[in-house]
Length: 433
Image (cartoon, rainbow, N blue to C red; front, side, top):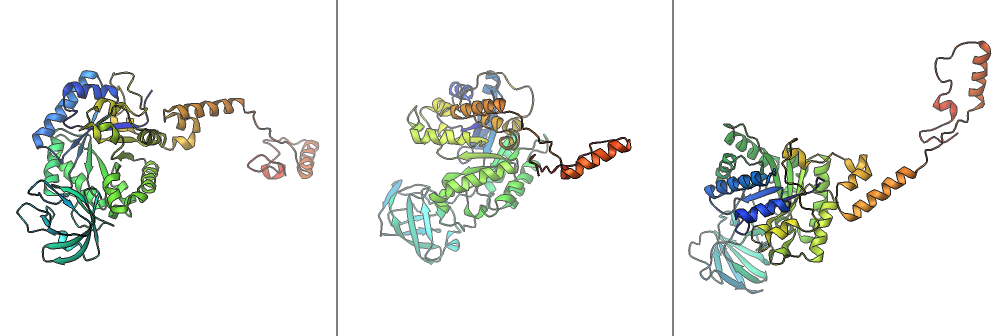
């Protein structure tokens, strides 16, 4: 039985061993994600070749997703590797600082930050765990006050609450990485931090140019991570082949409370436009250290499948001590056969029939492959088989009956039914007048 929901697993130190990778593919991984935020070009080419060789060995079709880094909006390094920021204390983000940071200030990788913020703005560091309020901007220095303290270490990310950072979606590094991705002909190219359709169109053109020699054209995935992308969702989807709901970065910008509704909206919109949808970030975070998921996270995974999402991204397979168990849980049945598909492309395999749940409720539920859905499907099938056909009324009006008698007495032939819907008094639902 084919699963409607596919699994995207990130390749990393814990899963780069050929034996481990083989077990991951057997356990049910469908797409292997290569994170271009780490490693060199040749490292990614070698890993791509490894994935394809292992996939051929187990007889399974596996796609490769090249995930571009995007703009690097991060703090610099600290002299001691990290500092502990205390609420109420002053802290300076200095775009010109070259020496390692300390408890009072740190340098920036993103040099345009002083021009993107103003007094009163809120900056969120380390995925929102640390909150700074901008008090003043002096030249290349952003003077802030710590609102929510915590440990800040080297190269942690910076987000602006509500969005508004002007960093372009495609950097010079991304353009080189696109060439690398086309060198091993990735099936999917994920673009980080797109703000509008133009970002996706530019990435597609760069990919097509880089793959012109082999005529390879990857499917483009837009990672929705910026608040600016929300009003442009429809245009971004039209310029893409699918979206990734990057819940981590998106939550930092729009707030955790807004993410569930946005996630449902994006997935629904993708289904209506027949595009791929991937839900990412902390799908099974507890399994980094444990072979068994917690109850709440298992529920998240099950809800993901019952919502008929197209794919689930599990980045924890990159660093997890139990990557194989991570890929197989929660409740996602491993592949029952390791034979390679003989028809349809992988992209087509990811796309179940459009609006299947509306055309045929039983079939729509069946695609979720969970026990609750199976029982519901069985009840629907039983109900439909036991349902008696609806009786259609043949009551006619007096005027119609008089016409039939007149026709019979006149001896003329009738070439059709003498009753029309209006004459019989029946509506669309078969009710009599």
